Image (tube, rainbow, N blue to C red; front, side, top):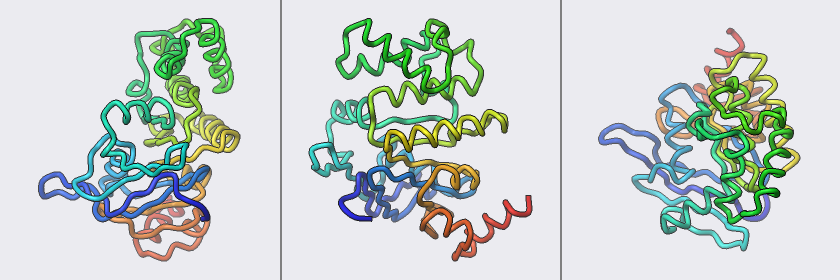
Length: 258
């Protein structure tokens, strides 16, 4: 990669008492790059994601983010207000359970519009128009704009969560098992949509998944974690087609045998 990374972690460790969440992680993500973090349950991938997304302070190490003006800032040295602003503008976070990323008791349009309002938008007509546009972009009938997410299917809720996150034009999106718990046909539709939006918008993304097929479809680079450590990283096709670490080989072979 050339230029400067968008997000960079150096020596990041998160401990829970004597238990290791992740340890001594060095990782950089460049603008427009999609990085998948894979590993079995308990490997530390979700802990690392939450540290990178400023949702779980590391026990040690630093995480820097390069703002639009080119300055690299330690995200945990920012004020709480500055971090919240970052999460509303430059970042998005797509949860596995869409209910964690949506307000379930307000309308679909309000879910999208609220994020715009958090960035200073006040013109009702423009906010509603943007909400309509984004509902259509994530393949939700615009006539559902006044329905609340409780009436939506799981796949529709996930697509609404994506619209809510992308409406402000973020540069980096964190995704935690975004297709987990969905039917196979719904997963395929969602993956196709995510892939299209990532390419069209030039998004950088960090994706946590246990599903190597999802990693292959969406990511440029893959990071394999075991017991809180990175054991292998490289271009996605290279790692999945010719893994070098025994643990990576085991992960890939288990998929082939399934």
